[in-house]
Structures are given as C-alpha cells and as structure tokens.
Amino acid sequence: MERLAGKVMLLWGWRRALLAIVAGAIGALALPPVGFFAAFFISFTLLVWLMDGSTAGSEGGFFRRFRSTFILGWLFGFGYFVAGLWWLGNALLVDSDEFAWALPLAIFGLPAYLALFYGLAAALAGILWSDGLGRLAALALGFGIGEWLRSFILTGFPWNTIAYGIMPIPLMMQSAGVVGIFGLSMLAVFIFAAPALIGTRKGMVGGLAIAVLLFTAHLGYGAWRLHGADALMAARPQQDVSVRLVQPVIDQARKMDNSDRVAIFEEHLALSSAPPAEGARRPDVIVWPETSLPFILTQNQDALARIADVLEDGQVLIAGAVRAEDAGPGRPPRYYNSVYAIDSQGQIIGASDKVHLTPFGEYLPYEDFFNSVGIGNIVDMPGGYTAGSRRSLITLPSGASFYPLICYEAIFPDEISADAEKASVILNITNDAWFGITPGPYQHFQQARVRAIETGLPLIRDANNGISAVVDPFGRMSTGLDLNHKSVIDSTFGGGPVSHWTNFARETHLWLIAAAMFLIAVISRQGFKSRVN
Image 1 (cartoon, helix red, strand yellow):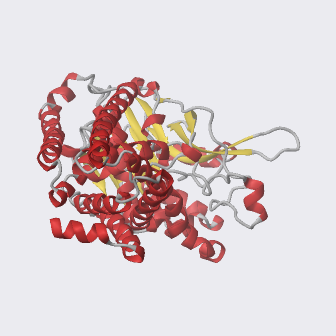
Image 2 (tube, helix red, strand yellow):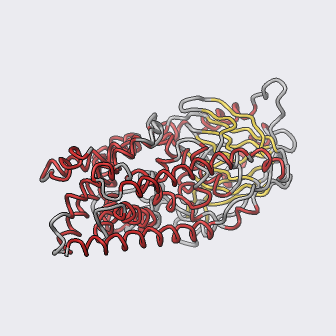
Image 3 (cartoon, rainbow, N blue to C red):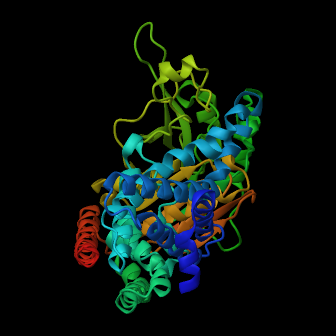
C-alpha cells in the first residue's frame, strides 16, 4: 500500500488528471442499480493520495494550492457525475430530431457544472490539509459543504449525493433519518477515505479506529432501528387504506403524440378497473403516474364522466395531470404540473401543483438568452410550466391525507415542510420513461425511499415506467413493479408517522458534525505546520 500510495502521489500531468477522473467514475459503482458501496473505498483512497501529491511542496503558495486541489476535485467530480448521470441523455433522444444536438451538454455539460462543487470541496479541504487523519476530516468537511451547497444553488440538484453510496439496503439507510444525507455524506467520506492512511501510516491507528467506530455505529443503528420497526408500526394509528398503483408503461414518444391521447387514457382506465387478485380487497384509492391524464381535465367533462363510469362508489382516483389557469385578458394561460384527486362522481376533490420545477425540462431559466441561441424546453408547453406557490395536502373523504411530491421533488429533503407531519403517507408520482432502461429510475427510487425514513411516513410511488412501489417508513419495499412491467400493485398502508427526527434536528446534527470535522482538521493542520517549520 505504501508503494502504491507513493506512485499515486508522484503522478503528474495527464496521468494525474486521468486517474482523478477514473477514481470518480469508480465511485459511481456505489450507486444504484449496482450498489457496490465498497467502490467508494477505492475512489476516496485514491483521491486522498492524489491530494497529498497536489499539496506537497506548495505550502508557501496558498493560491497555487487552492488552484491545484480545485482542479483535482473537479476532475474527480467530472468522472463521478459522467459515470453516474450519463443516462440523462436518453431524455433528449425521445425527440431526437430536435434535441440530439444537445446530447454532449447533458452527458458532459451538466457533470462539468456539478463537478464545480467537488472542486470547491477539494479546495476547501486543501486549505486544511495535513499529513495525518486530520486530512480525512478536512476532505469530509469539504465534501459535506459541497453537497449541501449543491442542494440549493441555482435551484439545486442533489442527485447522487455521496451519502446514497453508503446506503444500498434499508439496514444502511436508517442513519439518514438522524443526520440527513449531507451529514451522512461527511461521515461517509471520512469512512471511505480511511484506507488511505494504510499507505501513508501517519495517524493510521487513530484514523482507522474512528472510521471503524463510525461504520459500526452506522450499521448498529440500522439494525437496532429495524429490530424495533414492527413495534413502532403497530403503535401508530391504523387507517388500513387499500391502494392500487397503475404502471402503464407508456412510451414517451406515444405520450407526446396528440393523436394517441384517447388510447392512452383508455389503457389507464382498463388497468384501473381490473379485478383485484383473489382474496384481495377492492382498492379504496387508485393512483396514476405523473402527467398521466392526457387532457386539460377542467376543459374535458367527457373525461371526468368516463372516470366516474370506471370508479366504483367510494373509490378515489389520484392522477398526475397538466392544470391550466387563466392569466387574464390578452395573456396566455399558465400551466402547472399537478396532481388531482377525483371521486366516483367525477368531481375534483383535491389538487396540488409541483413547486420545484425541473430546469430546461419544465421551464427555461434565463429564457430570453437561451431562446436567442435556439435552446428551448424539452417539454413542449407554451411558455413552460409555472411553479406552484405551495404544496397542498390531498385529503380524502376517508380522512387519509397524501403529501404529494411530483417527480424529482422527492430528491430534496429540505423541501419537505412541517405539513408532512399531518399526512398519512408520502405520494410520489413520476414519469421515468424519459430515461429508458438505464440506472436513472433506480437512482430516483432510492432517493425517494430515503424520504420515507426521514419523515417516518410510508411512501406510495407510482411511475409511468418504473419503479412503482409501496415503501414502509423504514425504507423497506412492501411490493413493487420493476422497469418495463406493465401491471398494477394492490396494497395497503397505515396512517400517521412513526417516531422520527425533524429537519431542524438533522440540520443541527449536520453542523455539529461539520464543527467536529473542522476542529480535527485545524488541530492536525497546526501540528503539521509546526513540524514543517
């Protein structure tokens, strides 16, 4: 290990750059659908040794060290995000005649932007770099802050946060409910970087001991939490609502073809009206995925009447749809990506709009500039979508209430408001057909199920094409449908959250962890500078 560490530190030029990119790409193996979390041990060990090489001999030049470590972190992030997000290009191939030219922007442009946060993370770590275990703390601190910033700057995109690499199974997801994905990212980076100490020896015993202790606590808390899961589930209020999730697997090209709308609508209705399995209950609630209703529902009474024909007395349909709103005389209508609740009489009894829109998909930031260079929205909607002012609970006559998250809103943990505590269940409707048979839908599903753990609520997730599932408050999937499986799920869910930490508590824990990492890094840095001097 010492010989390997020495070779990595001494690399220079294109070899150093290439290894940084490869190290980042290796880390993407920790993400779904592979879920090989040990890949991050290789990834971050190599990064530490590369950082050692970048900071050596540059103690007298702050800006030189900052630039060198920033570039190194950017290269690492570029490899990680290209390997983890290449599938985004699939969305542009749905209408390839118009958007194929933008494939390089999706596959390389977005990763290049996201890698800036990892460049900043490495540069911040470089300021506090030392030769012992303190450099692991510095790296953990830098990446924790980088991931936190990535969650909200320019509307945020915390997809594939490092923490998701250390939670491939529910046992390893429970810690996210205590420290959040950003706090867990800090701890994960420290753990994953710890083998680097074997190659350099300095601080090896203490650093490895701390890493083993943290990883053991991570696993131990998960085991303890799951051991008491059934008792906590039994203690909460029981509503026992039966639900049917419809996964129609409609090709995205068909959804964009206006001539096929009626056939698509009837396919959803046919799946909804299929009899339940022998011995199963009739569903109280039927769920359709995002933008599944191919009409402006308030302008199509025939569609509402057709829904009423299919629903039995007392049943409710919850479906994704486009909602139109009059913007006033002489102005085009505003369109919202919404979810409706419709009763068996064909009446709309609840609705909520998507609050966090997808840039370049549902709206165009800096619209005048991008239109001037010929770039428009992927979704063909005049003027794009309008963001909802607030997220509204959907409460049914039975008393069951749904906290709606539309599509990638489920990747933003800090956007789940206190209203979620009043809900019976999280409802996440999505259309992952944009991404085809790629890692994207699996990554999206993993992030959504972590929201169930954070809120202590069950999760109902319905997708046009994968992955539809019912998940309990501990992230365990009760039942589900994989990609390309056209069918329905009949299941039940209870009501009320199990015991959980609040967003405020998780944020407090994040900054306590950051303070601890900062203190370790500063003490180690001061000792390192004294020895150098």
